[in-house]
Image (tube, rainbow, N blue to C red; front, side):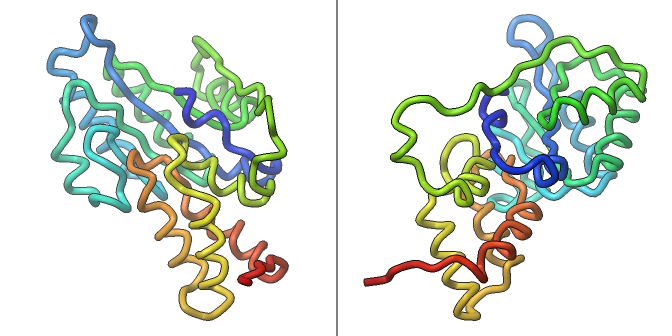
Length: 213
């Protein structure tokens, strides 16, 4: 799930950002796995998620929950996004009991996720980490913008879009919540965390200046 590994920010900010995925393995347990994947989504839906999606159908802010739930295929990769470790923990506990027979992956601060799994009596199978960005890093946007744009692992939320939302907030055209929800729309698979984005926009808007000339 490497496309969610590159989220940037402070420990405090990233501790409010978790993505839990489920998928089957083609040729191994994929046949009729859409039933298990739908049940995964039903369990996730019981808890306070802030985004959800299916990489085959789209994200919540693009297609809505009904389309996601009804569009699950055997080859889908489905997920929910949480800001609360407690909500994630509740979902993990129920998913463990359900024993759906599909692969489940959690993206988040390693120490936080590991601690949650140990609390639930789960031994982590594998860990994958990001080594950061190498190369011509001087061509990257400001770190504050990267904290927002990297929440869309496929790079569909651009720095220009974030700047536009900041200006809209400054001019009173949108609230920070409305801007964050709008930013979530082009993240087609739905891993973008709009509530974390809202907080980041609120912190940036008073200090961010853009030369429009």
